[in-house]
Picture 1 (cartoon, one colour):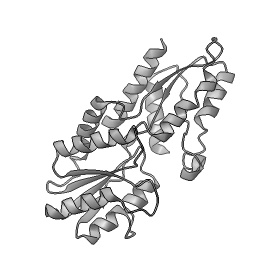
Picture 2 (cartoon, one colour; picture 1 turned 45 degrees about the vertical axis):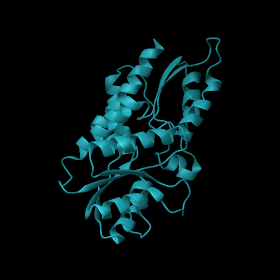
Picture 3 (tube, helix red, strand yellow; picture 1 turned 90 degrees about the vertical axis):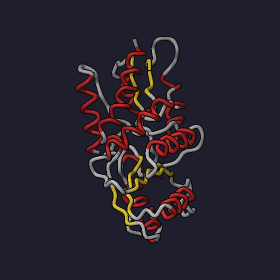
Length: 249
């Protein structure tokens, strides 16, 4: 929660006089409120604002791509938009990757943020969560952009089902082996570095990305920093929020 709280503090500082609240979209399968320090669901926060007399809200998504949770969130906004002036006026800022300009900017920013901790001959292996279309298309575009910027940078996403072989990881493993690469920096492409980053990516078990790569002779170390902790990437979300707020006018 420290990274999210810090983000909220920055938002509050940039928008004095505005009420700032953190809400969650993840459900029980992700740990729900326990993971986010008791944060309430988006619908509950908006209902409380409406009851308290708030009439306009800039709602900023902290998703990475427009996937299932993002669209579920949008679908839940209808009850607050009654069209007769009594409901909330809600403007939504898009996820980190909302268009191709975001993809290009974020790829550069991510590599730049790693420059101080990455060795010259070290590969970068970036793991995203994965999503169905249209979110999957943004991941594909990001994969291509990252590869164009750095031949040693590889991106893949987790399989949607637990226990399924990760084809992206096998592709990355084979590419690193074919290039004779022996060291890799593991990087989560996730808003916060939670269980997926610590276990699925960098865990000690044989089935983690680290375990699979090290079994192939590729020594790994991890940069367990969520995207929202990288200033240049947090700036993208904040700019999306600023545009959403401007639309309220």
